[in-house]
Length: 340
Ligand SMILES: *[C@@H]1O[C@H](CO)[C@@H](O)[C@H](O)[C@H]1NC(C)=O
Ligand SMILES: *[C@@H]1O[C@H](CO)[C@@H](O)[C@H](O)[C@H]1NC(C)=O
Image (cartoon, rainbow, N blue to C red):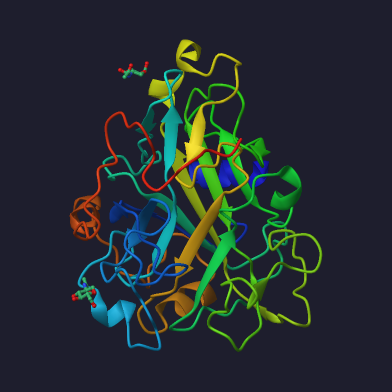
């Protein structure tokens, strides 16, 4: 992890591996989940969403939903990327039992971006500097889910090798990573890291649980060069989402629970952190992602078009749920009880 940290944070050193890294501002925050709960408004819990503005209550590929044709803008830096990416929303639970949504902040070098996330697409194994390995970009209609909002134990969370948190000392912090929520105040905020599976069955764009058509490498990880299992032989780019939750205004321990436990809760009601999850619906224009992956460039990608942060911030979708989730709340929308 450390090697990646320094390279990614500086962006100056000679490339030793290939990846795209770009910022996306907040497209919207709503209680919708067109992957797991299509057509359901509101969905069980609140999400924060980035990407193309074709995002909607339903996004049925077979029903004709086309993220590229249906979008007129994207909140991402690369204007060929109309994909949607989303995670749960983090809340602070004060000692008096009320909740407040934790804001998201842009990373260093992307100041001015309205919330959102940083997205990586990696094409090469991180420590295999000699090899330029091939990855196959996702196909139109492809979608997947990583993590499980119903999980609440460390043992369950082992199913997801690389869903983690970093208790940030500063903006450059990337290590150590934990599987549950950090237990002490984090000076620079909490980064949530979502690494999606990188092996595909080569056939199905989706599966009933949105997970079975993809898998992790047989051993190790994508970054350690792990081989894909024979059931899922097609090597995909490694998608990594980094979300920085700006917890700094909530670091006063006098506002934390009296038993000293950590006060952050996912919008699903999970106070353990083990319910960490993220969703992806592919929506790159034509073969732009494949071309960018094949070029083995580092961070930037001259073959892709970029837009300014001001333009990214302008791309939003209208509120379709009409629900209040800012200010101090008596309860998190849709959540009847918390899971500790
Ligand atoms: C979302 O879906 C509704 C219902 O199908 C449709 O009327 C609306 O135009 C869609 N919005 C966007 C931005 O595509
Ligand atoms: C609950 O605690 C928060 C944080 O200390 C405070 O800002 C808020 O006003 C309190 N709300 C009530 C109803 O006491």
